[in-house]
Image 1 (cartoon, each protein chain N blue to C red):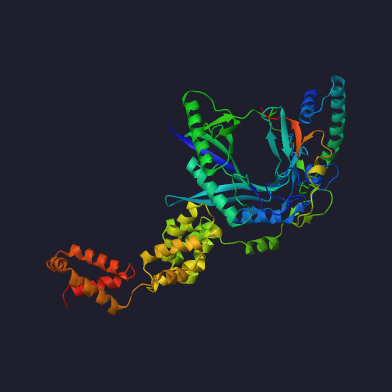
Image 2 (cartoon, chains in turn blue, cyan):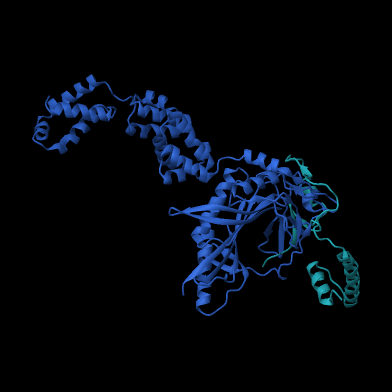
Length: 477
Length: 95
């Protein structure tokens, strides 16, 4: 039987605010346990949560970036359940009236565009962190993360393969990081994903029973977990068994999903409006203010790079994958005016250096200005492309400017025609055998002469000039 | 009767409340009385009235994103029934 996979994703993104969503505690990761806690986020009786305005603004940015409708009036609700990482006994979230709904983003695969619907985006607070004792029947609670602002982005069940799901996640991640509203760190949990997956026979219209997957902390794991789960469900169906609706945890080491021990009762969260928090009303002026402050989004920037700089789609994809990298590239282009060359040097040498050391473009020792200078020096013929390979290597290691390195090493390209002609004449005189062979039609031997000239000039001769002069002089004129 | 004893048992369980048999009977009766009373409101025609979540006409009460001092670990743990080092300690929640 042929099956179709149906996937919907729920993404939780931590907002890059300085303080928590309902109190003034710091959101910084890695503080001493329970050091970023106050009566509000500890859930003490009688305290009043007050909404952080920046969280609303960040959520609005994401809503605009994903083509959502921003609800002019939205409000908070209490989601009730007991768990030790949730001191109040409820999570403040949005339920009936989320900040935004009905959006979409575009995916591009194999030159085809696919639209993936966004059901809703809502604001909520994060829960604390639990550490389980290996030896004793005890768990330890750190409430620093309690109340850290999150937005949850829920997709429509529009994805049809694990690859497509991974692609969607990457695009969403890219947008959040471009907007500078989330640091996107998956290991630290700033960007988390749950997946709903089901299969159905190709000709069936209704969805099959879905499983919810959790505990996947990288793009690769999301894809692997989905691939495993699709196979598992196919096996069940092909063997006449039913898929059960349940939550399953991805086990990275074993490469399988296992059912999560059910949290007893079927979930009944008894949502109701939170009386402590008044409605959020967003008028058109506020939306326009947020829209005006939006940066260029990755997909738009990619298309602009292809169009304005005439670079291949692949290059544009690599260069715009990260905002800082795209900014760096554009700085280089602005300073040297050579988009194609800039792309080659950034994608080739600069990225290779950075990847080798797992370094960020923001801490690259080669400034955009220095790289632009180097490209200009090649264009002006001061150094050859081959010499530049050594120069850029030293620029990365020492942070020196290309001019400094060229001067120190005496690397200036020989473009003096008279001096070169004299060198070439000497070589021709010293190699009568090879000259004879060349003149008798064995043009392959031309390379020998180029090699000799480069050797004599320690690689500093301008290659084009060498070629021209050699051809002329070997022809016997 | 709008509410049965089993509803009371279910709600009590969700709220982690232990109730005795006589209490179940009593709560079922009391909760039914409350619901009947609230039902009176349903007699009102609210066609065309937008749902509201608050009784007061206040909106957009915001806070600026400015860090203020937290309590500190020691004070945060001061009321904890059980703590260890810098953590709250609770019965193990997973196996």
